[in-house]
Length: 73
Image (cartoon, rainbow, N blue to C red; front, side):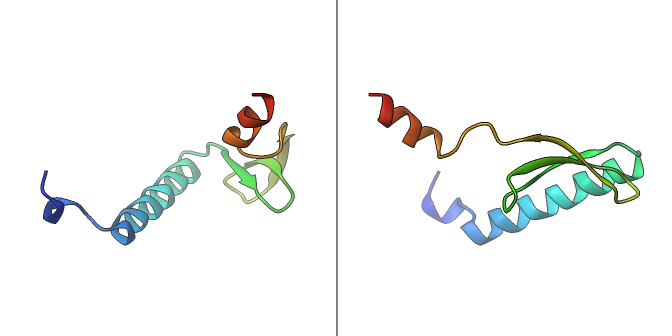
């Protein structure tokens, strides 16, 4: 593929955000809880279609995977 055929990073981000919004709307319409991660509190929630949040778990590890691997080596 030539460089002219690639899409820009901004277009990729816009498409990803639209896909996430569509999936959340679909889960809400089907009355299926969505799994959401709150990065500030580092807690995983199930968000129901009526807006209630139920805690599902907490973050198990800290740091990025690459940082954890390099510490062991």
